[in-house]
Length: 290
Image (tube, rainbow, N blue to C red; front, top):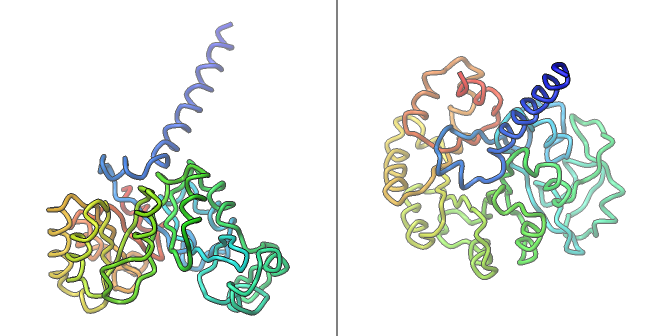
């Protein structure tokens, strides 16, 4: 009897821990409100040089348990299906050729993803497949290359509104975003991370979309040395109760940990971002967990 009780308790503990580990991936808004940790976002895979193809289901599965969020790219096919694909064409990442918008999803299914010049056994994923894989296990950062109103219906259908944030596909220096306008029209409260090539334009974005929670700060090379402009944007964001996403993909901070330059990362941490978006998320995640 004692052994049975022990086993039951052990199982309850294990399942309780598992539930606790997964709970932080249920609601992104809560993570920003609690501010317990800096969330780390991976760029298409869990780590640059990954053994998995970008924008693949295997890549999402590999990222689960390693990082907090994975960025993937969303495009629409000729017949209105949402797939994962960064480029306008399928030439670079599959064994096919042509523009995504010229294929139906069934036609795209004849092609396979390519990784390191080798054809894999994976097909181009549907966005809904990615949502199913990620749900409750990892947040998704959806780079919206081509969407319409049906995108918001799909996210709501799979009950993922609280588990994704979206990157609008704007032109440089725009302060108006088509995707945010669509979300407002649809009555969706999905999170967006609007960005500006000129960081000084974030003030316009904050004023135009006061209900948006996030400010996406891309640390371009021209801002990376003294971070004075970045600091001003952070101050503005905090004054407006915004969460801050640091995008370091184009800066010296991206490779800092792989180069042993931990002092550079400490400069970022000192500014108290809520998220860091990088090509080397596992390194960042491990460093921030120490």
